[in-house]
Length: 232
Image (cartoon, rainbow, N blue to C red; front, top):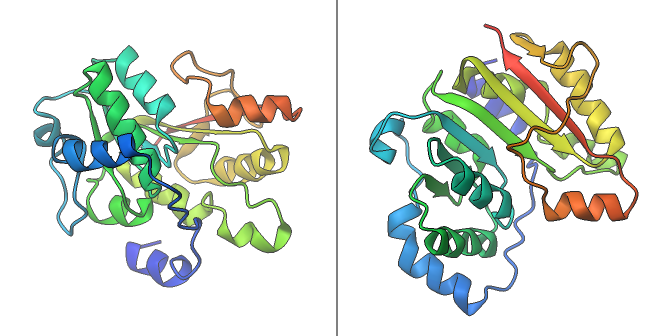
């Protein structure tokens, strides 16, 4: 499916709701002072990711990083990798920027925009080593399933951006959404389940525990990771 067909078919149905929330003074300051260092402006031109980071290194994209805790921890623990983050929630962006400054991290760049538009317009094909989608909104009511971000066309968009051998890593604490993800990913052209057909993966060491994960465990939800590698 082409980008134009994706736009026509799906972009009238958003997988997110803009929840801006209240900004703390620290988050406001971080956005005002640190955006020039870490922020990327949405545009129409493909990015040269090596130029963005000033080096050639593995590139990891996290879609919907929330408050940024996992992204900041991964960036700190893996300075040899470069991280892109996309998030619409401005308080979360501000919190991430403040934490990156505290940690002294220089291997993260951030978009505050719709992830699909950034992927379509600015991320080159075959440029990412890994794409992360941790605990997306499950839209658990049946009438809202059409809003789930994990759909066949979205998966193929991710596939286009991954390098050969790159990995799409999904995680959720909602069993029904995990089953939905497994069904779509298992049927997706150009991917293979790294844990074997129909199997969930062990949580990789690089994925930090998130607040959504902790909340899910408190509610008795099982945590499921799916790792699918791009084969073609």
